[in-house]
Image 1 (spheres, rainbow, N blue to C red):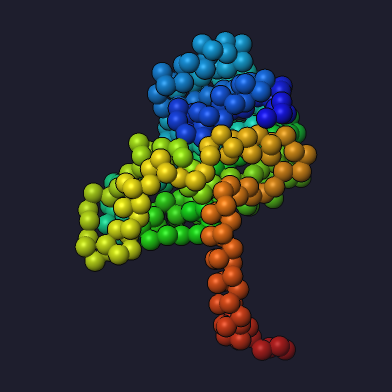
Image 2 (tube, rainbow, N blue to C red; image 1 turned 180 degrees about the horizontal axis):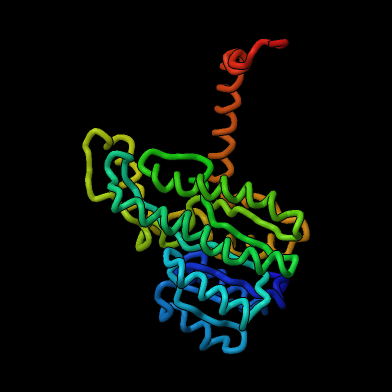
Amino acid sequence: MANTNTNRTWFITGASTGFGRLLAEEVLKSGGKVIATARNPQQIAHLEQQYPDMAKTFALDVTDAAQVASVVAQATASYGPVDVLVNNAGYGIAGAIEEATEDEYMPMFETNVFGLLRVTRAFLPHFRKQGSGHILNLSSIGGLVASPGMGFYNATKFAVEGLSEALAQEIAPLGIHLTIVEPGPFRTDFLGRSGVQAEAVIPDYDATAGNMRRYFTSQDGKQKGDPLRAVHAMMQVVASPHPPLRLLLGASTLQRLRNKLDAWQQEIATWESTTRGADFPEGE
């Protein structure tokens, strides 16, 4: 990997595992600086020990608004300017819409959506003041294509897609980039330690949501995606003068999106006359 991220300072949430941890390590190896955060800072303490002049770690629970404000203020005041914000903290829950309870799915919304919003909004004044910055919002192919058994996770990532698409247009004139990162199945612990399943099981959903539960238990560690290649792609995007709005990662991600777009185009064509017929006739 070419050394393309020297002199940039990255702020990464959810850096204890998965993409967040690997990205922090690779940025540091490339010569960049990293402010790594995690709910349990002991899990990322090795970064400061290994890179004492380049890494700083903080305890951060993105669902804690006061802690978000405090950590971002400390980071930008003492270790800034921050050039890249990576909203990586998040997790998924498997279960049918009827199966998962509010106590099970609401914490995921607090992390995946509202936590991401808290951190992003805390950084926007900083980025506006310096007239630059790059936000990487970790979404998923599940933010573009929904699957039975992942509806609540899909809802969080669809929300990330919508707010990111709007925000990208708001901040582009200010010199700030935003890229939505959309991985497919990668060999992280998303299906393992980070994966959650709804406690209630309704047999009627076995052939739909049940397949997703079985996928969680049978495919952990067998995913086609290489996390190291994924984080290198993220670094490449940040180094680009013309970064994309969306970064699809993994061949299966590409195929799933193309399949959805093809089906959508067919449905649009089939119902086009009904769609157009919903307007007032011309002249009225």
